[in-house]
Image (cartoon, rainbow, N blue to C red; front, top):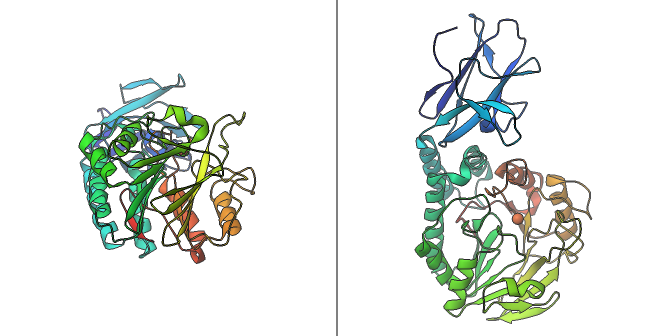
Length: 400
Ligand SMILES: [Fe+2]
């Protein structure tokens, strides 16, 4: 084998090589492909060396190993290795540029502009798949270029929210959605990532303040930090907006938040907001207070947001929902199935006119541990084409 160090790195392209003439199958698995046993298939050259080149778009440190006919092997020509959080030794490489991610993000922004929600889903799908290649990397929650992308997207949404005659639903981040209708803007489970565990994005205060300026009311469903944002709430309250929170945990939110009891309907600027008792499935003792909400706009649009609700017994009423916003990839104690199947069953039960597969790419969650990719949302939308479904990237708006 060549007398050099491996892997070979050029910008964001990484080439792995491994000399193993007797192996019948060789894969390179690591944090860059989620240790997915079906990924990283290497090809054997005539010289007996197996090779694979991958694009790792974000800067960061990545672990990997070879697997040759079932046997895990450290890279013998890479002096860089270390233990992971489970005390296993892995080979390691560093990517020092996010140039590839910058290109991808530009392509995504332009592509989504040309194919807005409700447009050609096949075109949108390609862009979401490209976004997954970055958002599903372990380094995503540290990435400056991804943070800058979110800032740009939030600032562009803030501008759209100033045009009060437009009616739309907008994605902010993860399961946070803005609803604008009848001249008012409501936020449901809005976060700006500053509060999210495992994320290191210090978004500028002026970006958050600018967004807060546009909200007449924001609601929070429960205390998990990927569902509410302390600073945003304080700004909204300070400028005379309303913040609605579940009564049982009202004391945990900023002063001035309005406590709403389960099954209570509150009238805010002619919008009727009802909190319902929900249940978080990843909560054996059922101690986590969680509400989901129904919103009836003054122009009679009925919107249901299931929070981190995972489709529990609370979602009773169906048949006349204009827009359902539900968590993709959730589990569900009531309807059969996990992930995609649970969502499809929820759609069969509630029969909404439109739906959004939400809670995607929450970067504070580990990969395969709650950071559901856009791919799951794509599968849901594609298997329920008759139901008019969408996924919304950060800052995207979809006409109500
Ligand atoms: Fe969540």
